Amino acid sequence: MNSDHRARILVVDDEPANIELLAGIFEDEHEVLFATNGKRALDLAASARPDVILLDVMMPGTDGFQVCEWLKSERATANVPVIFITGVGDTEGEARGLELGAVDYVNKPINPPVVRLRVQHQIELKRARDQLTRMAVTDGLTGLANRRQFEETLERENARLARTGDALSVILMDIDYFKPFNDTLGHVRGDDCLREVSRVLDETISRPADLAARYGGEEFGCILPETALEDAAAVAERVREAIVELGVPHPASEVADHVTASLGVATLHCQPRQSALRVVARADEQLYRAKAEGRNRVCAAGSAER
Image 1 (cartoon, rainbow, N blue to C red):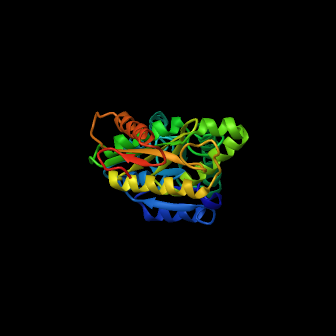
Image 2 (spheres, one colour):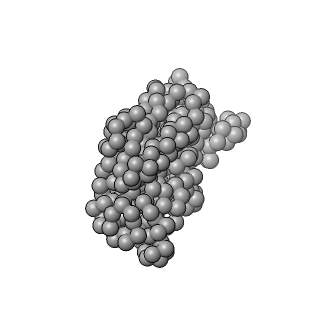
Image 3 (cartoon, helix red, strand yellow):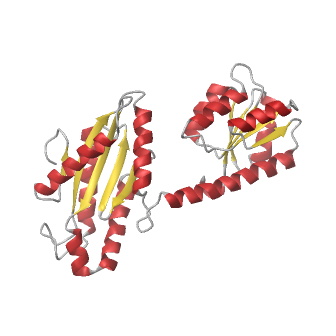
C-alpha cells in the first residue's frame, strides 16, 4: 500500500470530462493516475501497480472488456480490483464484465458519494488481502521474504526477462559455522544473529525489483533481475563485507572470531521455456565452492574468486 495510506487509483476513460470528474472525487485522499486508451492503461497498470482501476467500457479501439481480460491474464495485475464505468445499462454487458473478473459496475451519470463508497470498499478489501498475502510469503523471524516468495519471484522474473533475453542473477548465502554458533551461544543469540544478518541483506539488496529472502535455516537467497554476473558478484561482496563489519562475536568459528558468510553467485540469460532453477543450482555450486575454498568469500560462476 502506498505511503500515508493513500491508495493509487487508475482511471481509464477516453473522455477528459469523465477523468476530471473522477479525479475530483478522489484526489484529496488518494493518488489518481489516468489513461485515455487501452494500451496506456496496461502500461500504467503494470508499472504503477494501482490499488483500484476504474475502467470505461466503451472506448475506441481496445474496449474496456479487452483491457480487463488482459489485466486479469497478467500476474502483476491479476489481483487489482477493476470497477467498470458505463453509460449503457446493459445486463448482458455487466454479466460479461463480471465473468472477466471485474468486481463492480458503476453507471453513468456518476454519483460521487456512491462511487467514493464503492471504491473505498474495494481499497479496504485489497488491503486485507495484501496483508494476508504478505504474511504468507514473509519469514516470521527475519521479516525477509520466505522461500515460497523467493521461488515465485524467480519464476515470474524469469518469464518476464525471457521476452528480452536479459540477465537474471541469484546469490545464495550461508552463515559460516552457524550450528556451532547455536550450540555455543544458544538459540536466542542465534535468532538475534539471523535478524542482524537479515537487516544487512535488506539494506544492501535495495533496488525495487531485487529480492532478499530467507531460503532456509541460516541460508539466504537474493534475486537480482537485469544484473550481470560481475555486478551481482560486487553486490555479494558488499553483503559479505557488511556482515564482517557487524562484528557479531563467534567463538566457535574456524574462520574468524566474528560471524562471517560464504556466498555463491550465478547468472542466467533468460530464454523462453528455460527453467529458472538452473541459476539456483549454479549459485548453489558456487556456494559450496566458497565453503570448500575456506569460507568467508564470494565465488561466482565463470569468474575468478572474489
